Image 1: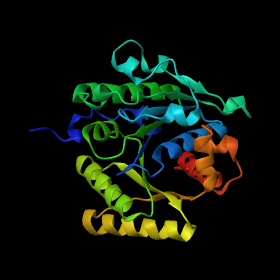
Image 2: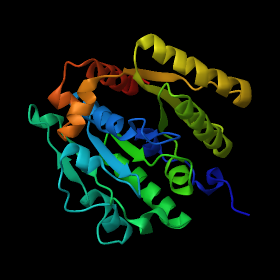
Image 3: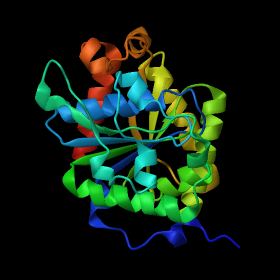
Length: 266
C-alpha cells in the first residue's frame, strides 16, 4: 500500500516557512499569472524572491514573462545543474532592484510528469534548501491532485488555493483542499479568489467554499485575498509582461499588492 504523502515528509525544516505554493483544483483559473504577479509584488517590496515553475507538463512561466531561459527543471532533475544554478533573472525595467529569480519548467516533457516519488521528494527538498537564500520561494504547481502536485505541495509553508466564481472551480478547489488535509491535517491552506467581478462576488465565492470545507472537513481555510477581474490582465499576458510593470495602477495590480502585503505580515 502506498503511504500517505504526509508520512513521506521528513521533519519540517525551518526554511519551509518561506515556501508559498500556488495551487488549484482545475486549470484556467489564472494560477500561473497570480504566481508571477505575486512574485513581482513581493520583489517590489524589497523581498528576495524565487519563482519555481512546478507545472511539470505544461510549464509556461517563462512564456508569460517573455524570458528565454538557458536552463530549466529538466537540467535539475537530470543532475546537470543544481537548482540554484538553473535560475533565470526577471528584471523589472522600471526598478532593477525589484526583479526576481525564475526556475523555468519544460513544457510538453512527458517524462517529467511521470517522475517517481523519490525524484519528486528530492526536488521538493532542493526547494527547501534553496529557500535559505530567499525571503520567499513560490511554487507554481500544475492543476489537479495528481502525485507530482501532492508531493511538491507537501511542505510546512503556505498553500494558496486559487478559486474563481465558476462552480467547477469551487468544486475542484474543495477536492484539492480535502486531499491536502487528508495528507496533512496541519497544512497551512488559504484561499485566493480570482477573476471576481466585484469584491462582493469574491466574498460570496469564498463563503461557498468555506461553508463546504466547514461542513464536510470541519476546517475553514482563511481568505488570503480577492483579485478582481480586470481586462488589463489579458493585455499583460498577450504582451508577455508582468501586470505590475505594464499596468501598475490597474485594479488587479492593486489587489495583488494587497495580497503581497498580507503574505509578509502573516
